[in-house]
Image 1 (cartoon, rainbow, N blue to C red):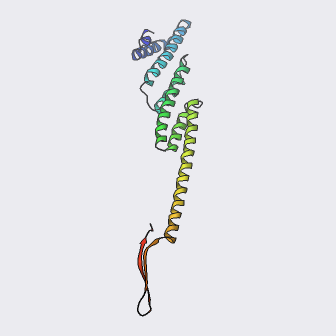
Image 2 (image 1 turned 180 degrees about the horizontal axis):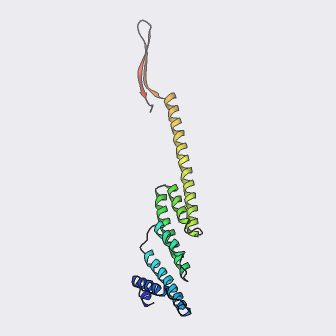
Image 3 (image 1 turned 30 degrees about the vertical axis):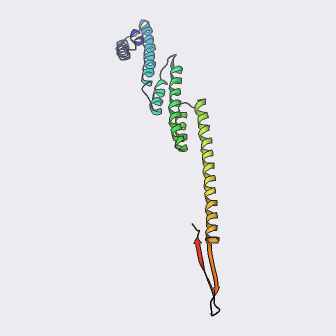
Length: 193
């Protein structure tokens, strides 16, 4: 127990394993109390190891694996540690999904959130962030449709201008020569695009 309190987890694990091996061959009421106590300390050790390892885990996959390993542990702190892992999964996911949203990669952001929802399915912060992604995606798509529509209108107006008002007359000189022929000359300017 002193090894667990001192966070000497590897030494504690070695001690627990040795004691389990010694008691494995022993039977009787005296030893059953020891076996229960060792089982309890083993659960405590598992929780302590998961807490310590969790500090160094930075991906949803790694944290998800730790959450899965926690399911086999029977300890009073199990729910608290599970919540810590889920919160870390949510925070990592939101940070990564926000980067995807900033780059207008809404589908990638939604996939990241869906993956995290496998581990933290009822997490309010994650569910509301998923809604925000969908709303921003819809707003972006609507804005894109409007931009495309405006570009199409501008192109049609430009095309009409090119077909109907592509030139302008700068100057016109008209005169009749000595033979009675009419001569027209001038300059025109192309204003088509």
